[in-house]
Image 1 (cartoon, rainbow over the protein chains, first blue to last red):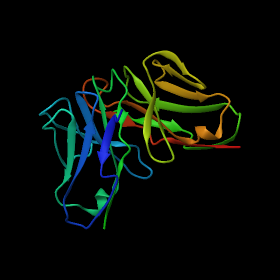
Image 2: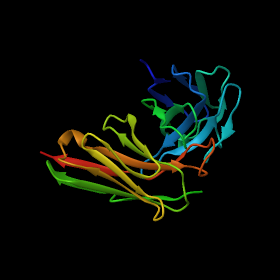
Image 3: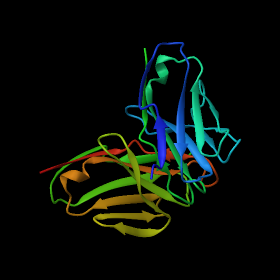
Image 4: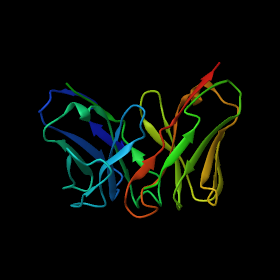
Length: 114
Length: 111
């Protein structure tokens, strides 16, 4: 069982470049989330989705865009990467939201912006 | 927005010791999560609890809703328990928002 799969696992970008991080889940979950993790800080919510075709902003959405065209996929885009976006990015999913169920996490994407 | 505080930030103990990690939050909630982040970076959910106590193997989680406090205990600790333990609560006390996380407790168990 794959669970939540993130691609790529590592990436180095130059300032101003764009890229898309892919999150795929095979559990038919409605809710999907993107978090970033920085040293000395807890994970912070970037964007989330409560179902196919829906997206919403989290705590730190600036500089990122997301799309949920298919239920199983949640894409995180950086249009013009900045060094402040150097971080480890985690995708998570669950069926009924964080109040009712644990979240299932991917293994993370380590992104460096030079 | 809920504020989540964990203590201690770092903890080093000897194999076999009883471990306690604490979590407090500022706004009433309906559920609290404990997660484990492995040295390799992966995150797994350990517990979700809304009252009382839950036990899984050597791990025990308790919560006191009135005092806005939860604890994670590890009995008979082992080097393989070395990890970062993270407490998290739903962002808005309910609904579809994600989680608000504590900064984590870095636990090292020495043989």
